[in-house]
Image (cartoon, rainbow, N blue to C red; front, side):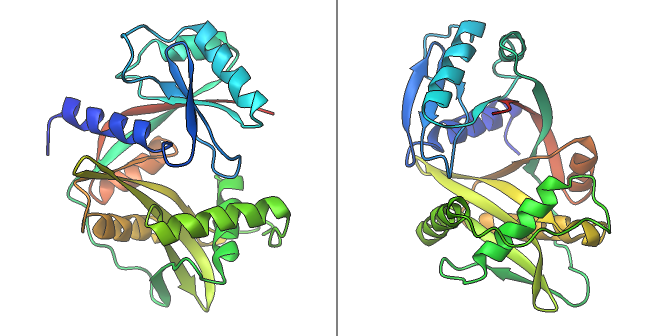
Length: 270
């Protein structure tokens, strides 16, 4: 594996490039603020090509104002090992800060899914795509998990339809690669990776790995993550993810991910 500074630089380059096809990027002091459609927002991040000035509380407040004027969620993400001052600035601006383990795919084990569960690559025209998004919505609404969670009906709102349309476009363009685990003809777990070519070096982030609460502890999430890594590595030089917490990180570490650093997330409720 490459050195830690090289990996972090690569991941920082990935985060800087991710919004460029979707958004115009405005400046708030030492922060870059992507202004995109609300169906696929991007958080503000420390600017990589600046003069080295630290992020201040005034920068964070200016970024929040830009995001709110654009109808976007007020959100900030950064790697504290690269920008240690941002946490204090975010907290001073009233934003709670969450620290997430940042892991890279090292010697990832090929996992076998439970009997009766099949894994599929999702096509852009798959008619069940809204159902797959529903699995993720339910899973992330109930991170603790419970066998008696009420599984909400399919969201048929215009906002949900717009989100599905953006996801279809991303899948068609190869910017999102989505997998779904099916059991008895029903989706039970999902996950994606999002590759970006950085001047010949392909980096991909694994995102949105989610299992219905009633089916957790069966290895579905780890199995999908393993399959996503295998697919990403057909073209990618580096594959990484941010785990939801230390317990989730330990699951990924047991299947061959290596903890690299931390990523921080700060958000304000609407």
